[in-house]
Image (cartoon, rainbow, N blue to C red):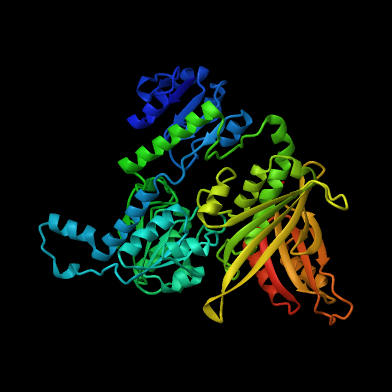
Length: 560
């Protein structure tokens, strides 16, 4: 077995691999031609410098696994690796403590003005009077994203005596309570936090999360920390808020363009004394790099020896035949999960349904006879779409970490011959307005299948039979079952120049004694594309103003 370690790793990392009898470990200091070394290699370990692109992979015909010592895999051509049957693994969460400590360090540096104190002392000034600061104790910290890093930040903030608020639709209330986090809607995070710390992944819902609108909601004097992704912030809006004094300070370790000099325009933060800048070093500690290396070495060893796949970002442990049969259903499960997960408020626009408490999956027909682990994980990953580091391999563990119960049932023989279908249900809970200890509960349910071997189709939604393709830009409308609604929908979308690709309708069956107009109807409209965001936003606002329409949601699924 040959393992090529193309970049420097810790001695402990190397020791784990060298301990295996007959394994040949080639370290970075002994490599003169990486392409030549990979000609007979079974495994490749990289960090961020080596570009594992198509050309490099073509030089490695025996390669079975690429291990990335870190989270991001931007330097690895994962689709090409998948095509070649190469597993790509990363190491999420190993640097959580390092990032959390750095986050608290930035908060302290801001409220005590440590950088300016250091600068004035080196300049020969004793400027004690102008350096009076404030304490973390008693302040409110809002954490957006309560995954591994967010939880570590909360634990440390609790030790400082801070009041910790959290926003994360994927964490169970019990986990939040155990870490003294009060879960609130994101608008409340913005309006009440003295410090705001971002710990979410980059998704269409989170990009530009900190913008002119959200900044206007924040209290004057708020301080913002970002050790997650630079794209979460609209830089010009934050810089302007700092200049105006509305934001007292910001500490940024990540940026839209890294390094900053690669940005097509000069950074608006340069020269702002109350904005602390660091070159993406939150996770860069000796201990974190050691933990990352050890975790990766164990993962690579277990895969090469036992075939166990951990933290893979591209494939699952299935035979070629099994994967070929399951692949379209895996994609269907992910899309159905995204559709239902959006209803729980995974973005910032709809948080009314509170927190996900449980997920139920029922496999019917042929699906009940197959290995369903990856189907389950794909559905959960779809529901948790946007949660930090969640993918189809670690989705079940991510749900467990968040206290989300997952239940599965299998029914091989289904009356009526419905074939291979997946019924997916999200169970949610929210605080009741009648009191802080009172909760209301509900669920969203969808049934889906695959037609013609490749087309994922929704068969029912929340108990209403409706058939539509699970792909592309979808507008989901609930309305009272009264005349004129369909025509009004078509008119408003036409006026917005939004072309309808398909229009599916369904309604809940009502009793004969039901009052006219009280029955519920559902429309799922597939648009050609969502490239005119202002027109779409206006159309959605116009649709919501129609008296008979009770809700409008937009879900953007991948095209087929």
